Amino acid sequence: MSDKVILRFNKVSFEYGKKVVLDEADFSVRQGTKVTLMGQNGAGKSTIFRLITKELHPDEGSITMDNNLTIATGKQVIPREDMGLTVREFFEKAFDKKVYDIEPRINKILEVVNLSTPQDKILKTFSGGQQARLLLAQALIQNPDLLLLDEPTNNLDKEGIAHLTKFLVDYKKTCIVISHDAEFLNSFTHGVLYLDVFTKKIEQYVGNYIDVVEEIKARIERERMKNVRLEKDIQNRKEQAGFFAQKGGHMRDVARKMREKIEELEEDKVEMRQEDKAIRNFFIPCQDDLTGQILHLESVSVIKNHKPINKKVNIVLKKKERLHLTGPNGIGKTTLLEKLATGHAKGEEIAPGIRISYYRQDFSTLDFDKTVYQTLVDALFDGSEQTLRSTAAGFLLDADILRSKVGVLSEGQKGLVAFAKICLERPGLLILDEPTNHINFRHLPVIAKALDKYEGAMILVSHVPDFVKQININQTLDLSSL
Image (cartoon, rainbow, N blue to C red; front, side, top):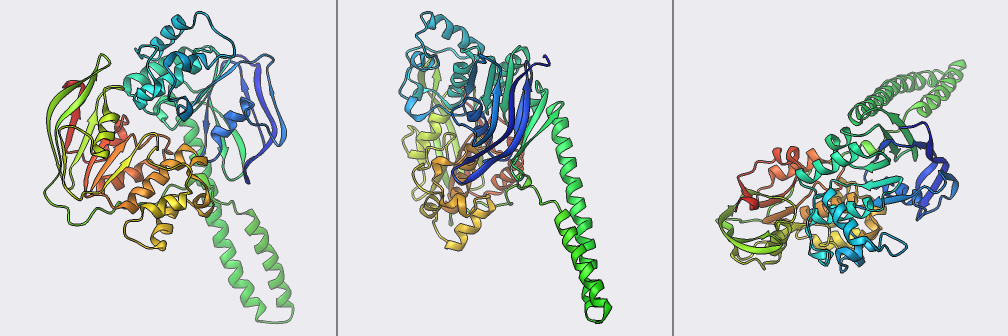
C-alpha cells in the first residue's frame, strides 16, 4: 500500500434518468488498497463502477485517474447476449487486440478460480456458480491496475469463496469490491466507501469492514436519538406556544418567537436515512387445501466429469416440509430446480393442481421488458389492487419503481420484486435458487423468517450457512454424496 492516489472523484454529480445518484461526491483511492463500496440496493453502486470505467460520464465535477491506469470489472451476471459464446470467445472479448497465447493464459486463470472446463464449452451450459467464476476469471486475466468486483461471491460455494479470498489477500494491486458478505469483506478490506442514498454523497472510512459497519450504525443511532430529543422539545414548545397565543397581548409575541424557534428545531432534525430501512416483515400465503404428498422425487441427474449421471433417490415433500439441496458448483442443482419448476424432471411426480413459485438466481422468470407493476398484476392470484400496492410497499417498491421496467432495476431490486411476486402467487411448492444473492444484508433475517413460517413445501439451494440456519430444514440432499 502506498500514499499515491490513483483515483479521485472531485465534486462529482450524476443523474441516471431522472434519479440523482451522486451530488458533489468526493473520495479518493490509494494504490494497493482494497476497499468496499457499501450502500442500499439501488443506491447506485454499480453506476459508480460505470463512471470509473468511463462507460458513463459525470454531469458535473471530474474523475481523475493515474495515467495509463488499466481497469477491469468482474460483473454480477454474464450479459444475455454473451450466453451463446464459448469460454475461449468470452475471454477473447476481454481484450481489444488479438492475444496469441490466449489458451494457456485461460487455463492458468481458470486454475486461480478453481474451475476445470473445456474452452469450447458454451457459457449458457454452466451453472450459476460456474458462471460467477468465469466472470471473475475474465476480469483477472486482464491483470488490471484497478480491479472492480461487483458481488463476486454470489453463487460461489464455500470452496469458491475460499479461493477468491486467498487471491484478494495476496493481490498486490488496487481493488474495489461491492458485496454484502461481511465475513468475506472483513478478511481483506482496508476501508469502506459508503454511498449515502439520502445525501447522495460518498463517506470514506478507514478500518476493517465490521468495525466500519459498527461505526456507521452508532452514528445512525446518535442521529435517531437526536431526533427523539428534538421531537420531544418541539412538542413541548408547541403546547406552550398554543397556550400563550390564547392569552393575547404581548404573550402573542412570545408565542410567535416560540414558533420561530420550533421552525429552527425542525430544520435541525436529521431525516432518517433511507438506506437503513429494512423490508417489512412479510408472510408468504400458501395455496389453500394442501393435503398429502406434494412432491415425490425418485431420481436426479448429477454432473460428474462434465457428464450427467442418473442417481436414485427417495424424496417426499408434504405441507410444511423443506428440502435443502446441496453440492458444489456445477453438480446440477440449478438444472434440477429448473426441471422441477417446469415439470420436465425425470423421476418426479408433483401432485395435480399444485402452484409452483420459482425464484431463479438469474431472475429469468421475470420479463425485463414489463413494468414492475405489470409483473405484480400478472402474479396476483387472489387479491385486490390494495393487496398489490401494500405488498410492493413492504418490499420498498415505491410508485416510481412500480412504473419502471424490471430490466432497469438493480439486481437487488429485482430480487425484491421476485419475493413480492411469490407472495402474490400464493404457491403450494416454493423453489428457491440462491435467494440471498444481491440482497441487502439488512433484509436477510426478514426473508429467512418469512421462509421459516411458510406452510407449503419448499426446496432451497443456498451457500449461505447463516441464512439456512434460520430456516427449519426437514431433509437435506447432497448431490455430491450420490
